[in-house]
Image (cartoon, rainbow, N blue to C red; front, top):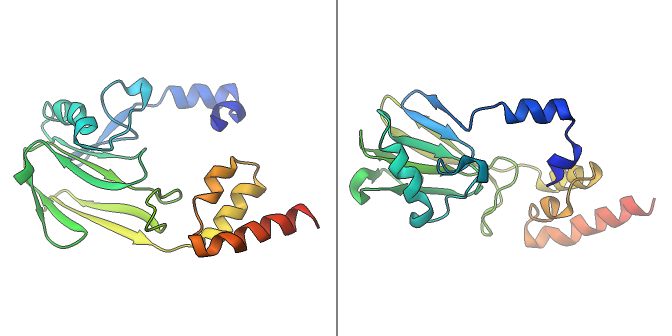
Amino acid sequence: MHAVKILSNRDMDWLLAQPYWFGIPGAIVAHASLDDPNFFNYIEDQESADPSLELLAKFSDPDGFFGHTHIQQVFRSNPGAVEWLGKDKFYIDDGEPCAVTVGSVGQPREEDNRKACWAIWDPEHRIVEFRRTDYDRLKAARSIVDAGLPLDSAIRLPEPEEMQIFLQGCADNANP
């Protein structure tokens, strides 16, 4: 992992002292699944969501918002616990465990949509809305390369039709 190699001991100690999850109004927020937090398990399908859903059921507010997969998805114990209000907006029944993976602002992983993806949670009305925002992915990819970060973090950002432009920019910067 790149971060482990470059973080100072002080920064690593700070990071390790942070909680694996915390509460927000009406929900729990975590980077990865709630089960085995030291392993940062992905929530990618119903099977991998079930352990976190079982743990969420023990909370008075059994809804959870998760990162790590960089993909927007919804998982629930009871299939009827979510009512879709549109393509990207849904209502979560009160008291039914629900795990929502919110996407990623800087490193989306969906092949067909590389826009930044994020979510809005309205705890009063129990509504979640998935959002997408376009950004200058070529500039972000070049910044990743310029910073010496892993190349795979950069090459997943451009759309297929932008890849040649990105690679040419890298070659131009390598040979001034």
